[in-house]
Length: 220
Image 1 (cartoon, one colour):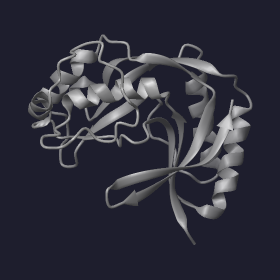
Image 2 (image 1 turned 90 degrees about the vertical axis):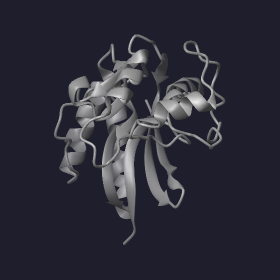
Image 3 (image 1 turned 60 degrees about the vertical axis):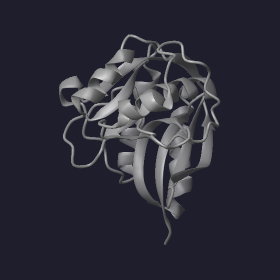
């Protein structure tokens, strides 16, 4: 039986995604490479406007960070893992039931942050202000309802965040260089969005990296 690597996520507006990728472009090691897939057409930077290819290479050369795929940046809410394709309709039905109890709500994407914290930084993130607590409630319901279907619960309480990079395997903590440079954006505001839908997404591993297929979209 076919299985699909599946997760639930909120798609980001192109302007917000573009600004997030500009933070990544400042840090990543792309020496000798063109800027990848400029599908977001990111707007000009608001801060630290000078970022030549040489400076990006210097910034990223000792980072040891694996950046998230750039072709479909999204806010992941729940990773389900390998799912049998016959289970997909039930997963979508549960999501629809959860979303029926919520109206569209606002999220404010703040500055650069770290998980689990700066002292043990393994993930480079953007903090999120969930003023209505709707996002946290939705994720809590997902954990409960999908656990009833046999999916593994997350071991830690949910902290609203947008993941942009993770330390590469073999490293226990981000380098001091990566932490210092990421902290340059800790007081910045990335932007805001209205959440009005959640997607069920399948991830397929290709030679060039993962590609994503939206299997269902549920409106709030």
